[in-house]
Image 1 (cartoon, rainbow, N blue to C red):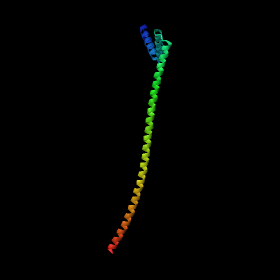
Image 2 (image 1 turned 180 degrees about the horizontal axis):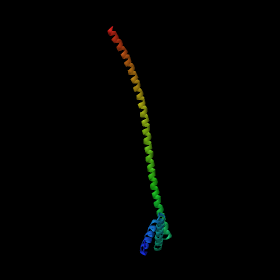
Image 3 (image 1 turned 135 degrees about the horizontal axis):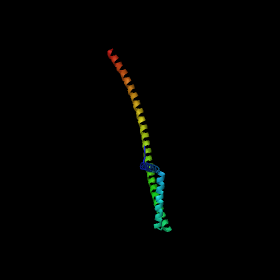
Length: 139
């Protein structure tokens, strides 16, 4: 098979484009992003002359915003803690009520069993008396 210089050029070009596209790793992407950020910052630095006071004021505002954010977050956590304590208290109360109810049920169950025994005993006595009456009636 004969390959002309045009076909070879197309193959080489295709392979080089494929390998260049395949080597684009996340690390390379991050490096490119950092470089573009650095270029943007240097361009900003050229066009804006930030004084030390302006820079300090921006940092104070950023610090104040962050502190406010942290206070809000802490406040939310405190509210959640209070709610959790209330839920725990409610659940403990419910557990105590359930324990008392269980005790009451056990006592009631014992009473029922005792009543059943008493009724069986009375039935046995009644049956004995009834048999004696029948015997007396036959005589």
